[in-house]
Length: 271
Image 1 (tube, rainbow, N blue to C red):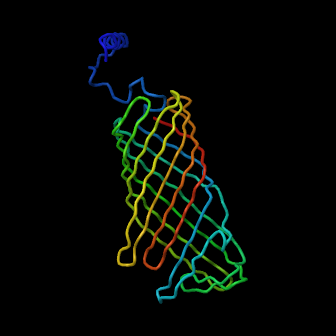
Image 2 (tube, rainbow, N blue to C red):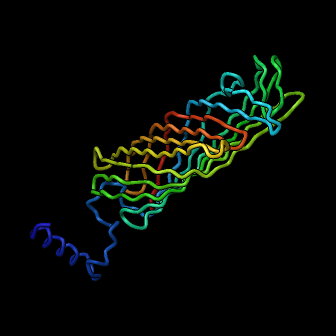
Image 3 (tube, rainbow, N blue to C red):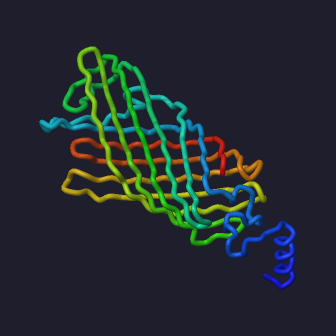
């Protein structure tokens, strides 16, 4: 900082009655930051209508092989709206603790066009099948912004994702369900830049790939999120973005390939 800038800063502090020493000023109160970057708690909610690609397979304990079931083509699952919740705790400028919850659920009814074997049960052709898929996705993350400026930052993300998937198929004769739950660690990068003092663009990518263990467990997780934020004031803004959320898993006798991707929009408040 130049000598002139330092003198101006000291004068401003004196006029405001700043009796506290300079080192006691909280770093998050730096007024030169872009609108929306001065906060300790951030809460955002959004509406998402992704295009799904959902494939599941469940083998029975007796070794009866299951069918590769496409929930869209075979069972008639259609696109629908979901909500997302995100919370960020920011104790210091470069450190953030993040939580996210995305409940995803699909329901459908369709007369199936081929025999399907699900968890050892035969669902015969030309019989109506009711389908219910519940997918709860949780994220617990720590973010460190190793490069930080008033108009943007670049950071690393370390997180634990918890995936809880339950699928149930029902017809007039049988009802069968499977459930797969697993914590998944992930690592990634995040970056943000401001195209205007109150308009930012953020990109984030996290991933993890687990090699097959004893032919029972394997999986991969890829999450790409790109969004823009318009901050009306320091504490309130709106967001719009595009996200791709891909999970491939194998847990014991069950496996799946679940992908949802599409645009979303929502709002954000900060304190």
